[in-house]
Image (cartoon, rainbow, N blue to C red; front, top):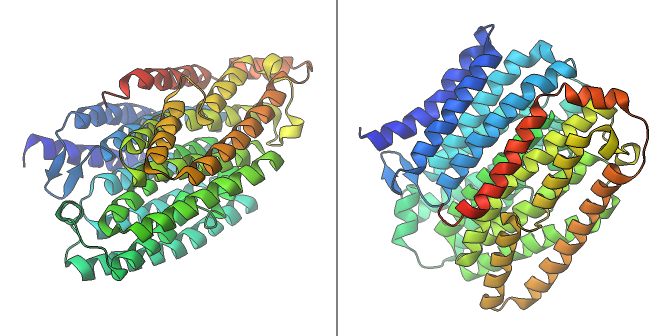
Length: 451
């Protein structure tokens, strides 16, 4: 076993070992230290040349996602320690931490494994580990959201299994690199395989109309889990769908993908103006981001680069949005947008982080979401899909205006006296962590081309 392969094994082993912190009274401290070590290892893995290493594969897309997963994981671990102690959810916190570590392992395993069948198993495992993270307090609404999540996503992934079977029947192997690099002739079987992969993994990603679990799960999940769902889990699923797309590509399949992506953007544009729950609002925003990421991946060329830019910045921006939402829930005791006013005066640090994260996820410059969207649209214009570009631009405009308008009202409308909330915010140490999170977003504007 060479050093590069050993590093990948270490990357996967660390969160598994950390999951045993459940049996220690220092589970939070172990989780914090271990997650930081995982970030260091993930950056070392970034230096590994792209290629196949034993059962693993490192390529231009998954190595970026490995960095995103490890960083958002670490931010979520640090956020959870303060957030849950404030809202009195500490009774199950050791189990919660342990499951977070396992959740990260399943995502990293899915990213680096070089086998379509094991990718499918990895995505299924993310469902099992993450569903339990929704029910930390075992409240009725949490259990209902978790049950709906498991039922809908598992049904979708059953369809994705059909795609795995069809790929094996066509190629007589499930080695992803061998299949993709060998190339293939378009066939009816591969079109069906790609379509079932779209429906199956699209359920996990939140592609319309297979998205119905997503706003419920995000709305009920603890804020750090919403951040992990939106910032890293869904992009991991999009990566898997991308690999299946490469293995099954036909011109007809690309058209099917485009139709579903455009339908997702239109749906979000129609429903965003009516949102009244801050976490559900950002959940629907995630659907927009994931549709664009998927579109960029399958389009290729400059659009692929744009998708990578969005993956990076979305991970931190959307995490910041859900962390800020958690602060607001902690301070105001509600998720209803109409009941949240005067954030600028009552929670000044959170209001700044909320506004910044909202600008990031809506594609405002100078963040790389803006550059990513521009590159995707530019590539589509070069490909001659002008009608799709018009629909995309209109939808992005409506979604962005709706989200920023609602956030602006929460921040700038009202001057209610809120000394109690201000004092609460001063004790929330994770606000400083949000500043680091946005610093990452700015830094990646300059590092994105190098990565």
